[in-house]
Length: 341
Image (cartoon, rainbow, N blue to C red; front, top):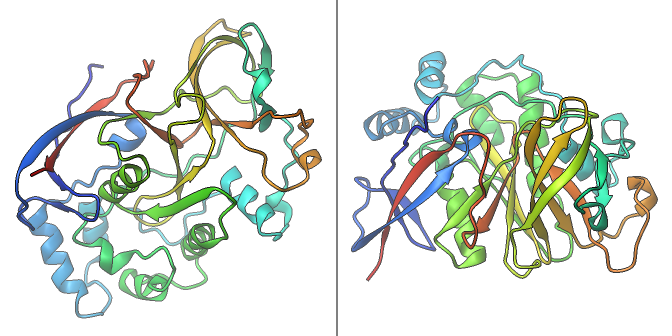
């Protein structure tokens, strides 16, 4: 399969971002970035005229007359009976919020490790693979104000528009996502939840001051596999450059929970699977220690060491484009046109 090119024209500013055609902004410059499949597969297929037509219908505050047509046209998932298992992000968030329940268990000792374990020649055991959350498309920016607010204030309205029962599986997953979006931040953490690619890009730009990024996405990791570290590349200038991690979260449309933790290092790691000798790429993020008991992570505390975890499944990491990740998976090209004076 060759590399497909995805080209979108977007007007960008640090305070707002809109599709050209809806708003006119002065002076344009182009930026190109490579999109990993986990992102390119989420770009909205809905055109501007269709999004404006659906926006008008939603403005009346009544349930959509044809939800299935809207969901099909927008690339959404609207089966209210769909069940999505809680990913480690939810388990960790509930742990941080002291809402311990069976899904909040942090018993898998392979989830976290010390930075010193990321050394060439070292062998490591991978954790269980994250459960896959079904692929959905982002909302068009035109519809986001009507259907998504990370504060949760619009949840009852969204359930009404889609005709979802408030105690359905999908409604519960949506509530879990909003709970995740609204839990308290750690020291040095800045975070948001986004339902459009434009908002995710704006968040990354606001934290880094950069318009050029590498979006890192590793290969699917073999669960519980033994791997050998062959090579690693530190992508954030020893933690001095901001990196933004974004994690897939469930809604009928694509939502990502994105956050920046001050002092985080990001590594592009080349691994060899012991049983097959297959070479894979993985992304590791290493954070300053959080203020919870380290024994719960089954990781011994070592002075001045960062606590690391793999970014796998549907997780991505944005880093300023000082070095380009060479991936084994294919990427798409995303063209941004940005207004400048």
